[in-house]
Structures are given as C-alpha cells and as structure tokens.
Image (tube, rainbow, N blue to C red; front, top):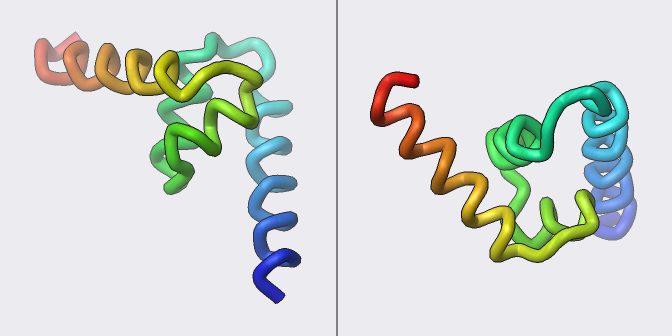
Length: 68
C-alpha cells in the first residue's frame, strides 16, 4: 500500500511540474515544497542536488521577508 501511495505522490508531482514547464526552477521548488516534498525528493524530481533546492528555498524566504 505504501509503495502505491509513493507512486501516486510522484505521479502528481510530475503532473505539477509538467503544468509548470514554463516556470523557472525556483517556482517549481516553492510549489513542491508547499506540497510537503523534502529537499531530497524535490531534487530527485527536478534532476538536481538537494543543496540547490535548499538555496532556492532560502532565497525565496529572504525575498518574502523583504516583501519582494
């Protein structure tokens, strides 16, 4: 059952990414993070490193705190 839920979760994430294909990586990272995915999971889905995801999320928080 757990494996099936993981598969459904990944499929939904891939659909979200597909719908956002014109969006930049930072926007995709924010959406996936808001959906509850970990940095490692997001990195896997976007074919990058989790450290890159951590930087994108940090930048987004800084922009939000500055009111941008």
